[in-house]
Length: 395
Image (cartoon, rainbow, N blue to C red; front, side, top):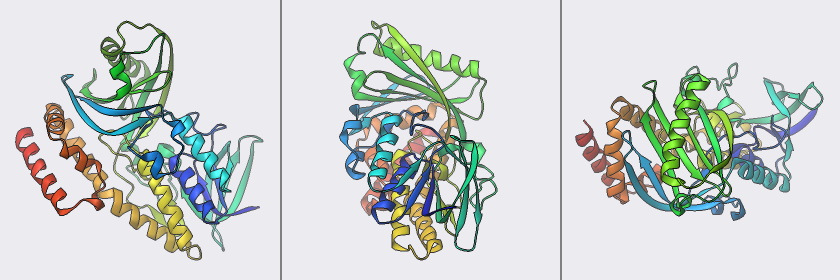
């Protein structure tokens, strides 16, 4: 049987960052990735926070556009513009593939076409079973620690990390990659768009438009399942509205359709057990208001690798240390965002109230965008005053 100090399931931003930084610290890390090409099947708008590449030492070559405008569209179609960052756009093929190559360059072993099946406790640690999709055989690796990072498909039933309410947070998404014969209006390539409205089935829809080098990513999602034809009809209507604004004079020469599941519920209540831990989207570290999760994913991978490197002779302690760090940095904020989203959905006109406040109070999005552990007392006092102002207008 193969052996490793750390087995990582999934080679997205969380798994690849954990592998890279664990290998850099001298740990033997093996990544199991079910797809043949890392990142090839990720359906994602792929927006990055300002300075993401610098913070995680990723080449700027993956960035398509620097986007200083965030356009929020409310339930009535009203546009509210915020300036920030700027943010960046890329594709998950480039992001995940680059992170995997960086992990490999540090000594991590990336095994593609390796589908996780089970994990069992043994005398010295764990046995991870997986299907080798190249030869059709079931194989196993003995390891001291396991890090789950396989995204929204990580149900993890039958493990101590299982979460009975996981499926309640699953969002069905559909995205078009729209390839134009000539460029859209210049403002398109400076802007990230997010759309919040009630769809044809009276269900809350979250939509987006992110510009890429050779296409526009236009997509939407709804919580729960929706019949395919109805989901496509909803996306067609959104795409038509965007086309009239951004590329009215340009013909579309190709459209690629992608569908996927995204998690936008509450974070997992249990992030670690013994020497096992979970990170990124698999841990529920996704902002329910906008689907952002790449930064949280990469940071969770970094936190796990750091904890394991510090406590490499006590992996249970390392996993507990990691879970504590994730809870303090992300969980409280994400739970608050979920409550906010539910509050807004009950009266869709509240989206417009919030977006107008964000657009006319530049400091507010700046404070909200920052991590809670970095907020000063003045930041907190300002935030509470803005919350009171919003509730007064939205009630």
